[in-house]
Amino acid sequence: MKYNIGLSIYLLTAIFQGCDKPQEKKEIMDKARDFHSYAIPSEARVKHLNWDVSVDFDNQTIAGTADWEIEKTPNAQAIHFDTRYLTIKRVTDQAGDDLDHTLAEDQGYMGSDLKISLKENTTRVIIEYATQAVAPALQWLNPTQTLGKNAPFLFTQSQAILARSWIPCQDSPGIRFTYNAQVKVPDGLMAVMSAENPREKMAGGKYVFNMPQPIPSYLMALAVGDFEFGEVGPRTAIYAEKGMLEKALWEFTDMENMLIAAEELYGPYAWDRYDLIVLPPSFPFGGMENPRITFATPTVVAGDRSLTSLVAHELAHSWSGNVVTNSNWNDFWLNEGFTVYFERRIMEALYGADYAEMLAALGFNDLKNQVDELGAESPDTHLQLNLKDRDPDEGMTDIAYEKGYFFLREIEGRVGREKFDQFLRNYFELYAFKPMDTEMFLEYLNKELGIPSTISAPSPNDWVFGPGIPMMEFKPSSERFARVRTQAEQFSLNGEVDETQAENWTTVEWLEFLHLIPDSLNADQINILDSKFELSQSGNSEIFFAWMKKLIRSEHDQCLDRLGKFLTSVGRRKFILPLFEELVAKEKYSEWALETYKIARSNYHSVTYNSVDALFEEKGLAIS
Image 1 (cartoon, rainbow, N blue to C red):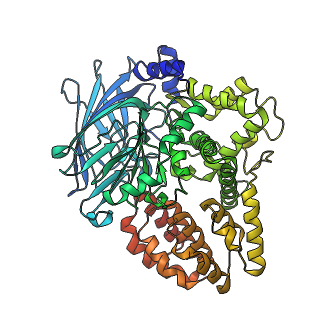
Image 2 (image 1 turned 60 degrees about the horizontal axis):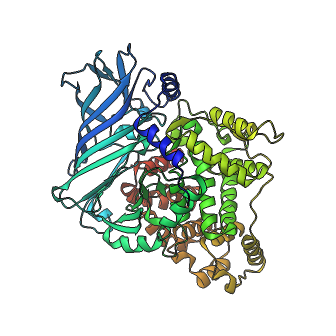
Image 3 (image 1 turned 30 degrees about the horizontal axis):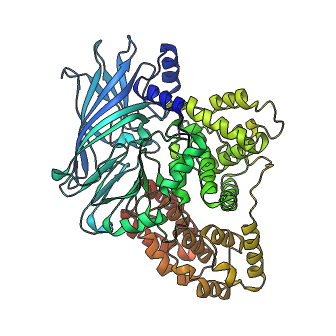
């Protein structure tokens, strides 16, 4: 593999020197202003954080100082920080002198504006503060909620705008900073961050971190618990609780190969190491692409290496999202659509084109379902969204992921893969560590590839600014899925499945089969599939989830015991919210669902329980 010296020099320049031209710097600072942050970066912005805190499990707080190095215009009178549920104790400058400050009233998901007055010579702002137990980014787990059952656990989830609930920051994806951290945790526990990380526990629980590459606040991350380090390859490793580590090392044995495949596609990896931590089951997402260390759900440790596309996805974010980042959450598709495209190219490189096509076909199913749910004419089916005065979490749907992917796939099909790959390599190099928005991308697309001028209908504008799914010239096609379709048709007609074929199906083939068979099954059909393939006992979370939806819709009461155990032991929102939606849609299950949720809720992260709370409130079911 050839090493791209030009890109390496560019990255180092971007990281350590920033923009050389004042006008370019001002344009980037102006671009970074977004309506989900109180920050005004064109007047004053952060550039480096020295974070010195202690983690208190007894009181469920993080307390200490956020010492920010700032840059400002000569006439700047104040700097604005985003906060939510933070107790601000004192604010000083680099000389230790107090700075006047005001903390505005809480504005719901936006939190509170911390306005700090600046002096002419202010170069640093030191904020002494503490989090509160209700901080939505933080999940504090007692020992019984972990695998080992003998130590507590803490993890953060900052995306989209939750970083402000554990660090006073300028919480916008368009504002980047480097950081150092000193974190004190209880003795016997390990701490890791989205930074250079330790490989063993430190005596006294004192950890030091360094992140030399600039990141936006939503990529700040911290995990504290009784976990260990295990190496996968020269640049890849797993952190996990002792009882999970060997399983995870086996499951993710291809991590190093994925990293090599990604670099061969789109250039050198910019973050030195790519590690992964397997968190407790309450983690609300499949994975979170925190730089240097992906936070991952244990639900992808299936025991058969069948769900590792999630790792490819989070790794791909190291280019699309972490290096080139949407400037605000209206342009979330620039992070996720590119990443899904990149993920499937990695999977194709490792496991073949047909496997990648099966993933794309499942993605198209998800896209159609999402459009049906939102409405074909809904503005929320546009790639570029309008999330002003809305929680940006509302934009994190399959539209950004799958519609974004198929838009890029259409471009690839029209200009050819070789040309499109070179376009993407140049894109990641040219815009490294800079904010990107939709208009900038379309301008670059037209400049480099002559699109949209060379495309009539559907045009990029139809994809980006229009609703629904435009007509597609390049749809996914898989020979293996064609055989699955034959089996699904046979089962729907006479209840038969060719066991010799089905016993060798991958997870994606099972998911396609369950998608194609009727939603409502009779008892005989359910018993045939369960007796032959033990779907109700599956340890594969994706298959189990898809099968449980079928059983709920079929009002198959025998599923409730196994389903109850799943709902009270897993916190991944992708599974939890749809299952409760299915349950409350059936009158006979609504009370059972409510009682189960009351038991399970304390095990969920706020990202999950806020979504499920809203569901029960909408249905008029009282949680308390």
